[in-house]
Image 1 (cartoon, rainbow, N blue to C red):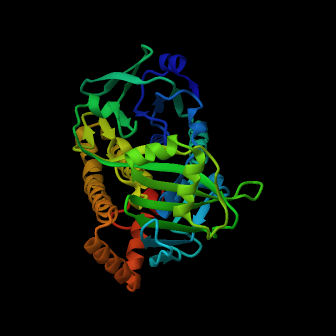
Image 2 (image 1 turned 90 degrees about the vertical axis):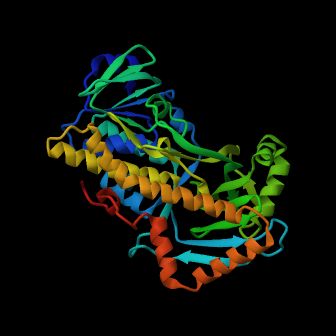
Image 3 (image 1 turned 180 degrees about the horizontal axis):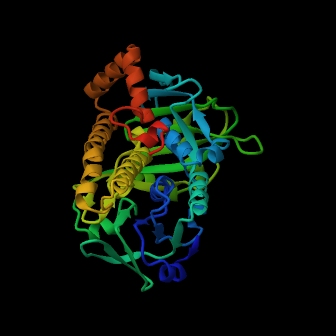
Length: 420
């Protein structure tokens, strides 16, 4: 971790520059540098130094992504603080219903001793990736945004907001769903808003969750409780992802704490005893954003810069890790063959690998949200019958577990736990 202005003056010639020091950007840099130490890789990030440490959220990391993090040398550091999700139940009800019948359950492992997902604190994940990047001598230039870039045949010249200039063969845009670099590259998106916001917070409760996650489909949107590792003092905790209509979410987050806790308790229930909010709730507007192209000359989009989807299936971050694994494999193989890692024909291989899967997941989450986020009687009957049928078909349940674990389809090597 270095001062942006000082480093940019010293490090002007790169093979790959990653814009964005979130999990996707850091994982991309680490993946490339670990597989090809000869590549000069750096990361530039607009956020102030240390801002990532203020993120109190947690993320669901699928089994395939855990394998990838293990291959990158960071999972051993994270694992002791990660909480395995050993069981998941799905209900479909109204907030006022006295009972919530369980229509679908998932349990078991994708391999002996391997849970299909883990909950990991964002700070732990980001910190581990940063330390691995430092070990690999990857420069992270913090607090400086990319203001412009010029593509000039064999390379790309990147201009930073502090006046410094960097040259690279490839620029990876991992700067989030509102990507400035995507816009600068002239890449259009398919985009619409859901009129929903996701409320995220951590709650403490009296009794242990035993690794069980729950997703309750309610008329305004899904309410998910995701198990977290207990605090050092033994406090049992869960992460909440609570989807509401945007105007209601804003009122809940900005309103009286007692009202928020009452509404939370109505949805969470008392099965784990008394519940209290452990941090300040925050709300994010939800929508679907998919880039029409994942690549442009000398530029590749990854993570939310390429796609932002509804959290109903909990696959947003894992899609980003799939991007990283596929892009790293394509770039590393091209470099081994002596090809130009930023050439458009090389980047097209990455786009062909990832685009269909991303579009498929975007459509799936969109359909699920529209199907379940309502209180229309005939639709309720159809979806409940569908959930019941899946519950009674073990092979179909196994298929969905493998989908959720990220181990289905044309899986890149890193997601299988294999070196590139």
